Length: 232
Length: 320
Image (tube, rainbow over all chains, first blue to last red; front, side, top):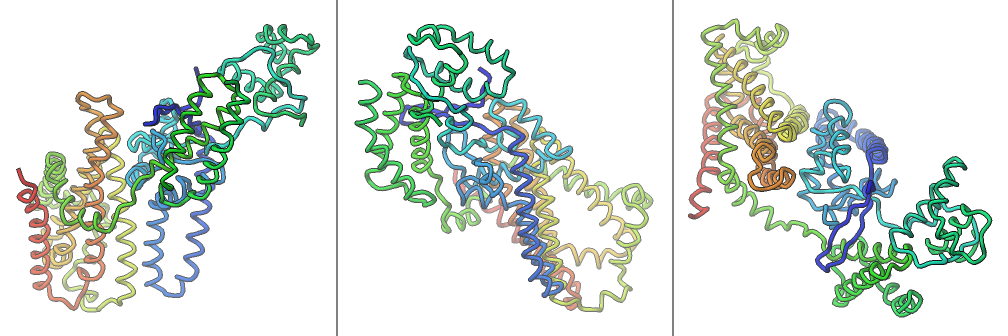
């Protein structure tokens, strides 16, 4: 299935799902970091300017650290997230889901120099498109992923209806499909919404109350499945 | 057991686990004696909820709890001071020997290109104009002209500091790019290696050929001992990174790449250290006009011997 879930198996024998982040959101995070880096550099340049040539030397070292080690320090010391990633609720983790360490963070960030070629992350984007979990070259070499910080999703974006339980027991994959319908269908044309809802005919037919509108009925089940119990 | 009963029985445990996670958040501790047991019970709950096809929101919540526990428990260790000192004392020269083929190939290409071009410039002096443009040649000649007055004027310590910053940013940056270029089947590293070898060879050869050899030689001999080796190590790290893509052996190419990357990192750290030391020597010693050329040659020679001994003696200590 075409999906952005990366499944890992822990030593405890249970599978955990990670949701990997795509190129667009990561590019925005990079833009935020560029701005933050620029501001930090500017804030340090002002006091150093007093010291003339000596200050110039210090400033060049600060620039060097900001260029190469700004992401490393934040990723290792601050939950795998630079300020830009934190703002977009992203996080760098190893492929096995463990927090990123010094070695892999240094690798993935030094290899930015290769990902950045030929223009503004050209190779990085090509690599992300070609790999299943959106990994740029640095991620491939370091064995890292950029994932969404796990949080309770789902309740957002759901139409406000009175939740009701499904009339039949649903498998987890089926539940996910109904939830996805509830989240995405409001953005689709009405005809397409109706067409998709008709695929779930057994779910509507099993309802003793005989709902007039299958779409609203599915919305209500979706709201129940994400844990809502009152209209809202 | 239906979902309601399941939640009612376990709710208390999930809450206390979430509280423990919040308390541990950001700290390097792995949690109290109770933490691993609690974590395993959450994993069990998650497996059970998935197996019974309980509600998606419940599965998501447990997945989130288990993932946070997983990340708290399997935290990478931060290297200690002892390990970092041990790296410079033992591990760095050892890994140079372990990756000897890559270091050797990089060294032969770099020094081969440099010496070849330096020799060719002696035979065909006009070759310098094929590599450098007239402006560069003129400024080079002005810089190393023994009769130029700037060799008598001491420069301030503040200028030394500015040059130190410049060398750090510029040279280590080039080292990192040389390494990163290695991911393109090693070609990027080879490009930087040949390019630097050719330019340095032509520059040195030209200055010797027009009789400025002593001013140039006394300037570069000190930091050259460190910096030239740093260039070789950075490129060797790049080749180590890219080679498994060409020749992955029994592993998948992607896994081979990851193995190559971790094997390359010690070489990269070594290159960074050498670049850093070289920047210090170049900024605060090489350009000093107070030190006679003879002393610079002696000190430079000593630095070459120390660098060579540092890497050479590791083999013996490595044991059979």
